[in-house]
Length: 299
Image (tube, rainbow, N blue to C red; front, top):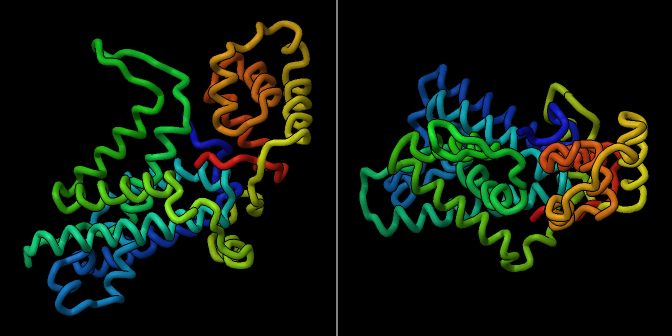
Protein backbone atom coordinates (compact mmCIF):
# COMPACT_ATOMS: atom_id res chain seq x y z
CA UNK A 1 0.00 0.00 0.00
CA UNK A 2 1.38 3.42 -0.87
CA UNK A 3 0.28 6.98 -0.98
CA UNK A 4 -0.10 7.30 -4.73
CA UNK A 5 2.60 8.41 -7.20
CA UNK A 6 6.13 8.11 -5.85
CA UNK A 7 8.03 11.10 -4.49
CA UNK A 8 6.55 14.50 -3.70
CA UNK A 9 4.79 15.08 -7.01
CA UNK A 10 2.01 17.62 -6.40
CA UNK A 11 2.75 17.69 -2.67
CA UNK A 12 5.02 20.73 -2.13
CA UNK A 13 3.60 21.62 1.29
CA UNK A 14 4.28 18.11 2.59
CA UNK A 15 7.77 18.24 1.13
CA UNK A 16 8.50 21.58 2.81
CA UNK A 17 7.15 20.28 6.12
CA UNK A 18 9.27 17.12 6.00
CA UNK A 19 12.44 18.96 4.99
CA UNK A 20 11.93 21.56 7.74
CA UNK A 21 11.26 18.94 10.42
CA UNK A 22 14.35 16.99 9.40
CA UNK A 23 16.61 20.05 9.46
CA UNK A 24 15.29 21.33 12.80
CA UNK A 25 15.48 17.93 14.49
CA UNK A 26 18.97 17.03 13.29
CA UNK A 27 20.42 20.50 13.85
CA UNK A 28 19.09 20.78 17.39
CA UNK A 29 19.95 17.14 18.03
CA UNK A 30 23.57 17.77 17.10
CA UNK A 31 23.59 20.73 19.46
CA UNK A 32 21.91 18.63 22.14
CA UNK A 33 19.01 21.06 22.37
CA UNK A 34 16.01 18.89 21.52
CA UNK A 35 15.20 18.71 25.23
CA UNK A 36 14.50 22.46 25.11
CA UNK A 37 11.31 21.89 23.21
CA UNK A 38 7.90 20.44 23.89
CA UNK A 39 5.20 22.10 25.94
CA UNK A 40 6.37 22.44 29.57
CA UNK A 41 3.83 23.75 32.06
CA UNK A 42 6.12 26.40 33.51
CA UNK A 43 7.23 27.82 30.14
CA UNK A 44 3.64 28.11 28.89
CA UNK A 45 1.90 29.46 31.96
CA UNK A 46 4.74 31.30 33.68
CA UNK A 47 7.26 32.45 31.06
CA UNK A 48 5.28 31.94 27.82
CA UNK A 49 8.33 31.58 25.58
CA UNK A 50 6.69 31.93 22.17
CA UNK A 51 9.80 31.10 20.16
CA UNK A 52 10.04 27.75 21.94
CA UNK A 53 6.43 27.05 21.17
CA UNK A 54 6.86 27.77 17.46
CA UNK A 55 10.01 25.65 17.15
CA UNK A 56 8.35 22.74 18.94
CA UNK A 57 5.88 22.37 16.07
CA UNK A 58 8.65 21.11 13.78
CA UNK A 59 11.18 19.48 16.11
CA UNK A 60 10.89 15.81 17.06
CA UNK A 61 12.41 14.99 20.42
CA UNK A 62 14.20 11.81 19.31
CA UNK A 63 15.43 10.01 16.20
CA UNK A 64 12.87 7.14 16.44
CA UNK A 65 10.03 9.67 16.67
CA UNK A 66 11.49 11.48 13.67
CA UNK A 67 11.64 8.24 11.64
CA UNK A 68 8.05 7.19 12.35
CA UNK A 69 6.76 10.77 12.08
CA UNK A 70 8.33 11.40 8.68
CA UNK A 71 7.13 8.04 7.40
CA UNK A 72 3.55 8.93 8.30
CA UNK A 73 3.82 12.48 6.94
CA UNK A 74 5.18 11.09 3.68
CA UNK A 75 2.35 8.61 3.36
CA UNK A 76 -0.35 11.19 4.16
CA UNK A 77 0.82 13.37 1.25
CA UNK A 78 -1.97 11.64 -0.68
CA UNK A 79 -4.44 14.01 1.01
CA UNK A 80 -2.62 17.10 -0.26
CA UNK A 81 -2.80 15.68 -3.77
CA UNK A 82 -6.51 15.09 -3.42
CA UNK A 83 -7.69 18.41 -1.95
CA UNK A 84 -4.90 20.65 -3.25
CA UNK A 85 -2.10 22.50 -1.48
CA UNK A 86 -4.28 25.53 -0.68
CA UNK A 87 -6.79 23.55 1.36
CA UNK A 88 -4.19 21.20 2.76
CA UNK A 89 -2.31 24.19 4.19
CA UNK A 90 -5.51 25.18 6.01
CA UNK A 91 -5.78 21.61 7.29
CA UNK A 92 -2.23 21.87 8.67
CA UNK A 93 -2.93 25.19 10.38
CA UNK A 94 -6.26 24.09 11.82
CA UNK A 95 -5.06 20.71 13.11
CA UNK A 96 -1.89 22.20 14.59
CA UNK A 97 -3.48 25.21 16.27
CA UNK A 98 -6.50 23.35 17.61
CA UNK A 99 -4.43 20.44 18.93
CA UNK A 100 -2.06 22.88 20.65
CA UNK A 101 -5.05 24.63 22.20
CA UNK A 102 -6.23 21.28 23.57
CA UNK A 103 -2.72 20.53 24.85
CA UNK A 104 -2.73 23.88 26.67
CA UNK A 105 -6.04 22.89 28.25
CA UNK A 106 -4.60 19.53 29.33
CA UNK A 107 -1.59 21.24 30.92
CA UNK A 108 -3.82 23.76 32.68
CA UNK A 109 -6.05 21.04 34.08
CA UNK A 110 -3.11 18.95 35.27
CA UNK A 111 -1.49 21.85 37.16
CA UNK A 112 1.67 19.74 37.25
CA UNK A 113 4.79 21.95 36.97
CA UNK A 114 6.88 18.92 35.97
CA UNK A 115 4.60 17.89 33.11
CA UNK A 116 6.10 18.29 29.62
CA UNK A 117 4.37 17.26 26.38
CA UNK A 118 6.58 15.99 23.57
CA UNK A 119 7.42 18.20 20.59
CA UNK A 120 6.80 17.57 16.90
CA UNK A 121 3.87 17.86 14.46
CA UNK A 122 1.72 15.39 16.38
CA UNK A 123 -1.42 17.43 15.74
CA UNK A 124 -1.04 17.18 11.95
CA UNK A 125 0.02 13.53 11.94
CA UNK A 126 -2.78 12.21 14.13
CA UNK A 127 -5.41 14.50 12.60
CA UNK A 128 -4.56 12.82 9.28
CA UNK A 129 -5.62 9.45 10.68
CA UNK A 130 -9.25 10.62 10.54
CA UNK A 131 -9.44 10.87 6.70
CA UNK A 132 -7.16 7.83 6.51
CA UNK A 133 -9.66 5.77 8.49
CA UNK A 134 -12.76 6.97 6.65
CA UNK A 135 -11.55 7.56 3.10
CA UNK A 136 -8.75 5.12 2.29
CA UNK A 137 -10.25 1.73 1.41
CA UNK A 138 -8.92 -1.65 2.52
CA UNK A 139 -7.81 -3.69 -0.48
CA UNK A 140 -5.93 -6.60 1.11
CA UNK A 141 -6.69 -8.75 4.15
CA UNK A 142 -4.45 -11.46 5.56
CA UNK A 143 -3.74 -13.41 8.74
CA UNK A 144 -0.56 -13.79 10.77
CA UNK A 145 -0.71 -16.53 13.41
CA UNK A 146 -4.49 -16.30 13.35
CA UNK A 147 -4.57 -12.51 13.79
CA UNK A 148 -6.35 -10.52 11.06
CA UNK A 149 -4.47 -7.70 9.34
CA UNK A 150 -5.11 -5.42 6.37
CA UNK A 151 -2.86 -3.36 4.14
CA UNK A 152 -3.73 -0.37 6.37
CA UNK A 153 -2.47 -2.12 9.51
CA UNK A 154 1.14 -1.02 8.95
CA UNK A 155 0.11 2.64 9.01
CA UNK A 156 -1.88 2.09 12.21
CA UNK A 157 1.07 0.27 13.81
CA UNK A 158 3.43 3.11 12.91
CA UNK A 159 0.95 5.58 14.42
CA UNK A 160 0.63 3.46 17.57
CA UNK A 161 4.41 3.35 17.92
CA UNK A 162 4.58 7.13 17.62
CA UNK A 163 1.67 7.61 20.01
CA UNK A 164 3.36 5.52 22.70
CA UNK A 165 6.91 6.69 22.00
CA UNK A 166 7.11 8.90 25.08
CA UNK A 167 4.08 7.50 26.94
CA UNK A 168 2.12 10.31 28.61
CA UNK A 169 4.22 13.01 26.92
CA UNK A 170 3.17 11.73 23.47
CA UNK A 171 -0.28 10.24 24.13
CA UNK A 172 -1.89 13.59 24.99
CA UNK A 173 -0.66 15.39 21.81
CA UNK A 174 -1.74 12.37 19.73
CA UNK A 175 -5.26 12.34 21.17
CA UNK A 176 -5.52 16.12 20.72
CA UNK A 177 -4.55 15.69 17.06
CA UNK A 178 -7.24 13.04 16.55
CA UNK A 179 -9.85 15.38 18.05
CA UNK A 180 -8.67 18.21 15.78
CA UNK A 181 -8.95 15.94 12.72
CA UNK A 182 -12.47 14.92 13.72
CA UNK A 183 -13.51 18.57 14.07
CA UNK A 184 -12.09 19.34 10.63
CA UNK A 185 -14.03 16.46 9.12
CA UNK A 186 -17.20 17.70 10.83
CA UNK A 187 -16.57 21.01 9.03
CA UNK A 188 -16.60 23.11 12.20
CA UNK A 189 -16.89 26.80 11.25
CA UNK A 190 -17.01 25.62 7.60
CA UNK A 191 -13.26 25.14 7.80
CA UNK A 192 -13.19 22.67 4.91
CA UNK A 193 -14.15 25.45 2.48
CA UNK A 194 -11.25 27.67 3.54
CA UNK A 195 -8.05 27.89 1.51
CA UNK A 196 -4.93 30.02 1.61
CA UNK A 197 -3.96 32.23 -1.37
CA UNK A 198 -2.32 30.39 -4.24
CA UNK A 199 0.72 32.67 -3.99
CA UNK A 200 1.47 31.34 -0.51
CA UNK A 201 1.10 27.67 -1.41
CA UNK A 202 3.25 28.17 -4.51
CA UNK A 203 5.95 29.55 -2.23
CA UNK A 204 6.37 26.05 -0.82
CA UNK A 205 7.22 24.76 -4.30
CA UNK A 206 10.12 27.19 -4.38
CA UNK A 207 11.07 26.70 -0.75
CA UNK A 208 11.16 22.91 -0.59
CA UNK A 209 14.05 21.16 -2.25
CA UNK A 210 15.11 19.06 -4.02
CA UNK A 211 12.26 19.02 -6.51
CA UNK A 212 11.07 15.46 -7.01
CA UNK A 213 7.98 16.03 -9.05
CA UNK A 214 5.93 18.43 -11.04
CA UNK A 215 4.61 21.68 -9.54
CA UNK A 216 1.53 21.44 -7.42
CA UNK A 217 -1.80 21.88 -9.12
CA UNK A 218 -5.09 22.38 -7.30
CA UNK A 219 -7.27 19.29 -7.15
CA UNK A 220 -10.88 19.56 -8.22
CA UNK A 221 -13.72 17.17 -9.05
CA UNK A 222 -13.15 14.30 -11.50
CA UNK A 223 -14.66 15.19 -14.89
CA UNK A 224 -14.89 13.90 -18.42
CA UNK A 225 -11.24 14.72 -19.05
CA UNK A 226 -10.21 12.34 -16.26
CA UNK A 227 -12.47 9.66 -17.68
CA UNK A 228 -10.79 10.14 -21.03
CA UNK A 229 -7.32 10.10 -19.46
CA UNK A 230 -8.02 6.92 -17.48
CA UNK A 231 -9.60 5.34 -20.55
CA UNK A 232 -6.53 6.09 -22.66
CA UNK A 233 -4.31 4.64 -19.94
CA UNK A 234 -6.34 1.44 -19.91
CA UNK A 235 -6.19 1.17 -23.70
CA UNK A 236 -2.45 1.88 -23.77
CA UNK A 237 -1.37 -0.49 -21.00
CA UNK A 238 -4.08 -3.13 -21.31
CA UNK A 239 -5.53 -3.00 -24.84
CA UNK A 240 -7.72 -6.05 -24.27
CA UNK A 241 -8.59 -5.30 -20.65
CA UNK A 242 -12.09 -4.00 -21.36
CA UNK A 243 -12.91 -7.00 -23.44
CA UNK A 244 -11.29 -9.74 -21.35
CA UNK A 245 -11.75 -8.56 -17.76
CA UNK A 246 -14.84 -9.30 -15.76
CA UNK A 247 -17.02 -6.42 -14.69
CA UNK A 248 -15.70 -4.89 -11.43
CA UNK A 249 -17.79 -5.67 -8.32
CA UNK A 250 -20.41 -3.08 -7.53
CA UNK A 251 -19.03 -2.73 -4.00
CA UNK A 252 -15.60 -1.73 -5.30
CA UNK A 253 -17.11 0.83 -7.67
CA UNK A 254 -19.23 2.25 -4.83
CA UNK A 255 -16.14 2.56 -2.62
CA UNK A 256 -14.35 4.70 -5.21
CA UNK A 257 -17.48 6.74 -5.95
CA UNK A 258 -17.84 7.47 -2.21
CA UNK A 259 -14.34 8.98 -2.33
CA UNK A 260 -15.56 11.46 -4.93
CA UNK A 261 -14.49 9.81 -8.18
CA UNK A 262 -16.68 9.56 -11.24
CA UNK A 263 -18.40 6.18 -11.61
CA UNK A 264 -17.18 5.50 -15.12
CA UNK A 265 -13.60 6.52 -14.21
CA UNK A 266 -13.77 4.25 -11.17
CA UNK A 267 -14.92 1.31 -13.29
CA UNK A 268 -12.17 1.82 -15.88
CA UNK A 269 -9.52 2.15 -13.16
CA UNK A 270 -10.73 -1.08 -11.53
CA UNK A 271 -10.52 -2.85 -14.88
CA UNK A 272 -6.93 -1.68 -15.27
CA UNK A 273 -6.12 -2.62 -11.66
CA UNK A 274 -7.75 -6.05 -12.04
CA UNK A 275 -10.34 -5.11 -9.41
CA UNK A 276 -7.79 -4.10 -6.76
CA UNK A 277 -9.40 -1.11 -5.02
CA UNK A 278 -6.16 0.35 -3.64
CA UNK A 279 -4.36 0.18 -6.98
CA UNK A 280 -7.38 1.72 -8.70
CA UNK A 281 -7.39 4.55 -6.15
CA UNK A 282 -3.75 5.30 -6.91
CA UNK A 283 -4.46 5.25 -10.67
CA UNK A 284 -7.26 7.80 -10.23
CA UNK A 285 -5.19 10.02 -7.92
CA UNK A 286 -2.22 9.92 -10.29
CA UNK A 287 -4.42 10.81 -13.26
CA UNK A 288 -6.01 13.63 -11.27
CA UNK A 289 -2.67 15.03 -10.09
CA UNK A 290 -0.84 14.81 -13.41
CA UNK A 291 -3.63 16.42 -15.42
CA UNK A 292 -4.82 19.02 -12.86
CA UNK A 293 -8.30 17.62 -13.21
CA UNK A 294 -11.40 18.35 -11.12
CA UNK A 295 -11.57 16.24 -7.93
CA UNK A 296 -13.80 16.04 -4.89
CA UNK A 297 -11.99 16.37 -1.56
CA UNK A 298 -11.50 13.24 0.48
CA UNK A 299 -12.33 15.25 3.57
